[in-house]
Image (cartoon, rainbow over all chains, first blue to last red; front, side, top):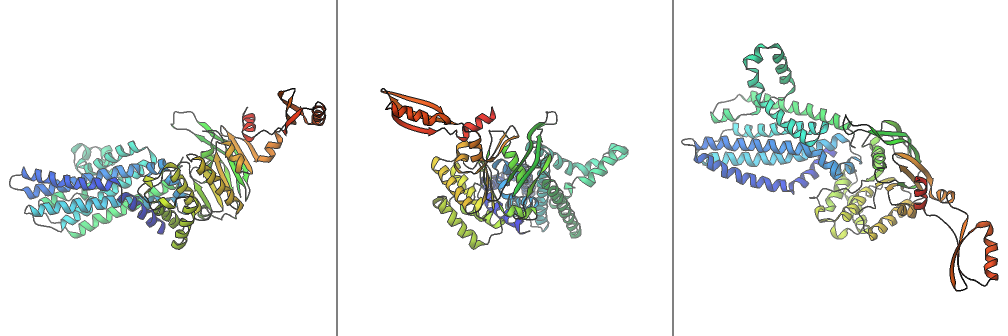
Length: 255
Length: 286
């Protein structure tokens, strides 16, 4: 366990000083500008549009970062050969990989907090009222990004970086479209499609459940137990995925 | 200490590609206290074999056995090994000191020991002036030195170095070789790959030579030199104002000497001809 935190700590220091953090600053500035412009075009409900836009951009940037970080996490280490130096020490491959993922997740955490808080700030500035659900929305956006990050790492273990990016984007789309697809008439009536959808519900993460924007925009209330249930599902999913990734990495030939 | 037993490895980059044999039934032994030079041309299979030794990659057949003096399980064995890959590019945004602290922490060395070790090795590798600078400002040679320090700071019993001298300037090469020799004298077993024969000849007591994945020679350098030496003597002398270079068989050398003395020749040099390791390697390859 200690090794995981050591790898995470130094990965965080390395990333914190890298250009990724500078880009986050520019992205935040861009978010403020774009949200302001978008709210100017919204007659009557600028705050709502600002929130919709702000959380939307936060989520997209989080997903993009997760996919690119995840797809390159190992290829970069192998190319630079730092992976070999570290796993030649008294550290298991799993500890290295989990530590690395944990360290790089800090980028997603910082992005979620910065962009999410900025979106809330603009919303309140434009006359909106703060709701506790907004914090949940930020937490869910981060959770969604972490799930995609893990999938991206998984894909990078079995294929190359480019394909890992493509598969991760595909998974993101399927994870969001699954619920709506299951309601289509042909899917409901055709046995084959029905089984495929049932299997997909079991395997693919239900990312659509992590989208709280509609609840926020239309001020719908959500039971706390429902939110905790989704978070529990997500954490369990991530744990299972992490174990699966660790097993693959443990047996992977690092040629 | 380490025994390779019939290790073979095949590669196939795409499923439609034909497999090729990167390592073909390699068997050899590294004794405790050896300083082994691992020779082979580019693409001979040196790095592949080192990756198998370090458990990064798995062989298709054969085994690598570690002696119990290194440890009983994989993690303990790893703790007794120092490894440096060829031309590693270390984390650019960490300082040299932070990188070494990182390596020290995962090697479970206490902080005081790490600090001492960093100061000692940084000084020895002439990196003290740059140790608190970010690695991105380091040259290739400096990164190589830093990587070397990281391989040594946990006082390993066995050092595995993949082309440690590549990318170094002549002074750096000399320093590296001096330190390798000193470490070996202190009891560290060293296995290092190189494609430069003279480096191996200079410091190693044993050589392992592979070519296209096949083991060509394994044994002491002295034995190889004796085995491939001829019985010729080189005579260099001036006779009647002319410089003459002559090769004479060992049995005839005394006679030749007497002849030259009687002719009052100016004998400049009489030396037994010794081929160097490089010449022998070329000879074996043919």
